[in-house]
Length: 491
Image (cartoon, rainbow, N blue to C red; front, side, top):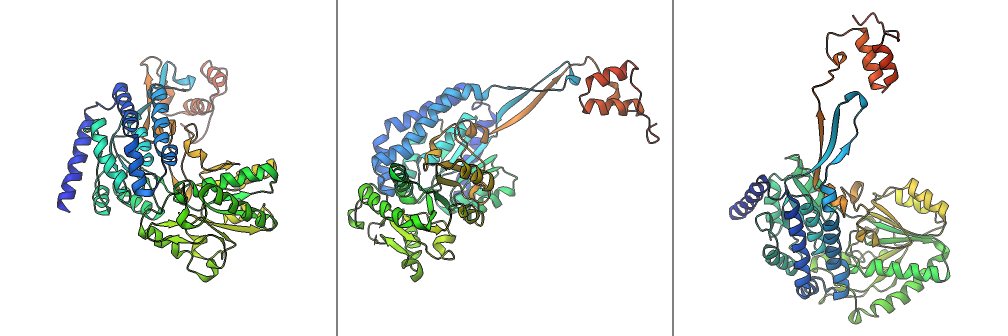
């Protein structure tokens, strides 16, 4: 443990020294590092595919869509906009301060610690790193030990491409994480479970370190009464969003579906057909779907089905391959609401369908539970859309699709309540790793004497008018055309 403490302490000291030197604040340094990230993923695409396959069984197409492509578009977007983001913004001042000017100047926070998650081990390490670099920080990245091939890749390649005095990677498990959290950082960015998020926040509080927590929660789908081609498209997008992104091991993955009771049989049949088309039949013949990350998580997901009343609700799937850590896409119809599958985040390929008499009841159902990271709604009803937006709270709301909000750089990505707090992507990443410093320039000319003692009724009236921005009243007061305020308490 002493060796670990010495190693992480040395890394932090070097990062802080390099930040203090000012070398990361310049535009060219930031652009150079962003280009290096683009070069890293471009020149090592096959190695990334291999690492993701070894850790999670990701198909190269899924790997590019959810990992390499995410990093590439994020770095390119930042390169195109970083100069504008860095520029001071003009601040507004009351006329009373004339002559003066103000600006809001973005400055880097300092030394940043990024904890990456195992389910998207490349993009969830490099995408926040892009934001931290864009803002001019020095960074230490701690990838997840649960994705060892990807962690090894990042630890090996990042020093070869990026400035290894300002950007470092540290490998290790919970013992390393504990030592990192004992140190003082200027920002901690964490992606993972709410349980670990609480540990991160508790440790950060000791140093008053600001944190961004990208957590998860039980993200629902509300399926309104659709028909024909609209329903088929909805079912395909539900199937892709549930099982096509790391086999449901995603913070924004679909956790359950709410549908009117009378439409449930149709939905179940369409989902069955879609699963067979996209992923195949029977667990030993599955394709285009990830495996569960390790035996512990595999056991956790299987345990959700151990309750006899939950097992009785399975209407499709339920098989698993313990040796290869595959779980068949599984549909459950109305499992008990007090069962663990409906109280804990599933984070796997199990999809409960909850039936209600009317779709409007879904709002009350969702509000009775912790705020989700995302709510997905398939509907053409404008009134219901507006009602849902006004009466629910979530990190995001997506109408008539799933998961795509994650790749939209123009939208903030983050949670609310137990699904996390803070946001990133695009300009929001830059802002997350920056401090907006207020700068005000005043002249020595035109001193406002009413701001200083000794106090009297005239000065009180002046200040009243000034706070009301009543410039005509101020002019009248100064010219003696306005009755001065009098009070027995002002002398």
